[in-house]
Amino acid sequence: MKINKLYLFLIVVALVAPSLVYPVFLMKLLCFALFACAFNLLLGFVGLLSFGHAAFLGTGGYITGYLMLETGITPELGILAGTLGAGLLGAIYGKLAVKREGIYFAMVTLALAQLAFFFYLQAPFTGGEDGLQGVPRGALFGLIDLSDNFAMYYFVLAIFIFGFWLIHRTVHSPFGQILKAIRENEPRAVSLGYNVNDYKWVAFIISSALAGLAGSTKTLVFQLASLTDVHWHMSGEVVLMTLLGGMGTIFGPLVGAGVVVSIQNLLSGGELGNYINIIMGVIFIICVLAFRSGLVGEFQKLMKKNFN
Amino acid sequence: MSADYVLETRNLVKEFKGFTAVDDVNLKVERGTIHALIGPNGAGKTTVFNLLTKFLTPSRGTILYNGADITSMKSAAIARKGIVRSFQISAVFPHLSVMENVRIALQRKEGNSFHFWKSVKVLDKLNERAYELLDEVGLKDYANALTVDLPYGRKRALEIATTLALDPEMLLLDEPTQGMGHEDVSVVADLIKKVSANRTILMVEHNLHVVAQLADTITVLQRGAILTEGDYETVSQDPQVREAYMGVEADDEVAQAIAAANVAEKANAAKGGTE
Ligand SMILES: Nc1ncnc2c1ncn2[C@@H]1O[C@H](COP(=O)(O)OP(=O)(O)OP(=O)(O)O)[C@@H](O)[C@H]1O
Ligand SMILES: [Mg+2]
Image (tube, rainbow over the protein chains, first blue to last red):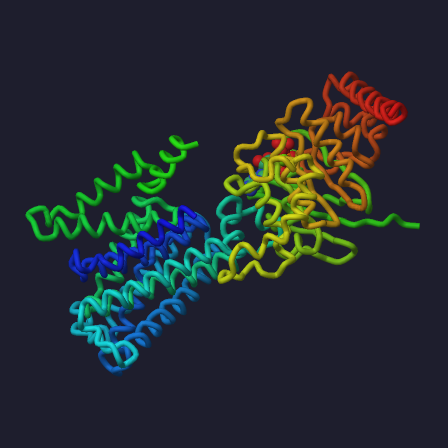
């Protein structure tokens, strides 16, 4: 019940937010939050550290950007295509990666993501270093013009809520139980008769499709698909967001994304802009050393201690 | 008439980089018995388990289950065929509740384990069966506890309940009483005896009292090879075993074990009589 009230409160906040805060900033936040939540499905609930999730964010973005520029399809179809494309790439990459464990899994995902990076760098339809610029947002279902930031915001919010709900449902499903079992004790899950690689694979596909959804949406928001989104920096950033917020918690990635995006926004204008990477690095180190379970994780511990 | 073997290995060999951990093992486990695998540290007992359940791939040899060759099957498939193993260190899902641990096993036959779009509530219909299983191992009152908080002995009991949830034909238990206090050992030993009905159990066990109490057949492994085989009396009389496995204290150890087993048996009988 308490949690339901919390959700209700958050939705109300999200609905009124654009009249208080610049909508583009909020949309950026929601896109990264969705990206981090998708990533957390693997890290927090299956125990798989992917170091190549930028590939899916970028793939979603490029597909949507290309289709919106070249074919004039409606944005919801553009986003759907981007999501499916990222999911398909996830199916291929995941198939190769889930056979590996621990650090090898991370290395395989990184290597595959680099492959994607060089592909997008060279491919004729991605605009190389410039990326795809001036992507039109189009009209939702051909009816609602999304060039208006408020309309776009509510569309992005709806997408985020859908993605968040799907992750929440996945975690709290019969499938999610097996994922947790794998995270907790993989050999035991095997000895109970589960083909753990198949479960990891399905989780990988869901995660990469949702990362693609975040990328597609982001491309529409900024009307831009670029190499930044497929760069390994981006794969690292999502790790930072998730750890900072608290992996394996539902709200952690959301909070982590909020903090990281806010700091970036604060610093990027000012004199400290050049030191952004260093500052992020320091935050990362502090967080890993001092708040092992992230902001949300530590908060939950505190609540437990004080109210139980 | 030849005996009925559930599990059989033929010339099973496992080599690690020139070192032979399992050396030409021909193991035969008779249906419905409790079969103990004993031997000094590093003898290769756990490795045999890993081979039988394909957590390791044999270098050579065949594994037969109910007469069928399962040597090339995968771990999870072997489990689904009916051979479920435990591990030398307790194998539970620590951050799931006790109830959830058992449900993970029960869930497999439901066929909804890939359904990520359904609510976890669809698993609630398994709760009744899960309670029954927990009751069987004395954990009913702990159903909602977080597994990591259980004392060690109870974790092992939970592990057995989880294994039983699959209703396996054959159980492989790797040192089920390792690291336990006196009381827990006898609780778990009784539990194993209880669940052995209609099942075959192959167990690694260092505690000779437990072996004496439970095992119908004992295979002694030394440096990867079978040293000898037979019932407790035969094995414990074997001079090679006395020398190789039990060392100087063999006489005492064995005598004590047999005595303890006999006393336990009598005590049980007496208890049964007066109640
Ligand atoms: N994966 C492996 N790689 C290399 N050597 C191994 C491996 N697994 C086991 N061994 C070696 O094989 C031998 C047998 O080990 P195993 O764990 O099977 O012994 P054990 O009989 O179970 O001993 P314990 O009573 O201590 O549990 C040991 O010398 C061990 O070091
Ligand atoms: Mg061992």
